[in-house]
Image (cartoon, rainbow, N blue to C red; front, side, top):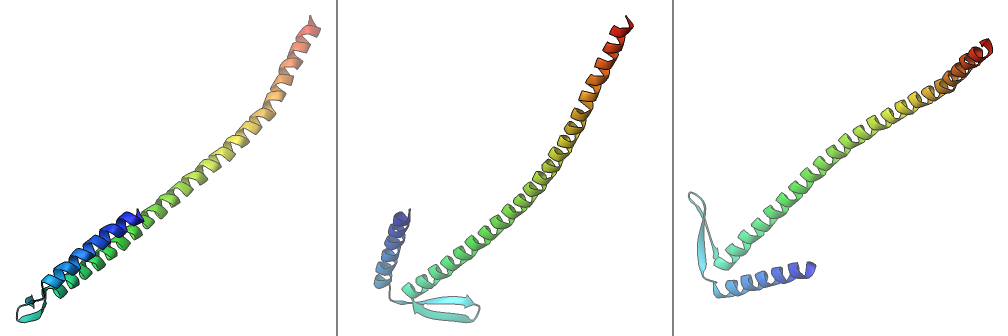
Length: 121
């Protein structure tokens, strides 16, 4: 992928240089009313492309920051859910252990009543 990016950037830069060589006559830029600059057309295009590249980079960094914030919020939500589920598991384990303690006692009670019934007969 890096090689493809390099080729695209190289071809684009080469085209820009060739265009700049062919267009050296001065052009006027009207910044605001009453303010104008005069520079070769190739310089103006290079500046415009540079400003565009900087804005694209700033936008890219901004979107990456937003994605990182969203990801960190999702992680916090998932951590909270994991903690809740772990607490549920511990509570269920405690309930199961308590029920297991009661089950043998219930078996003994049934066996004792069965033994009493047999001895009474």
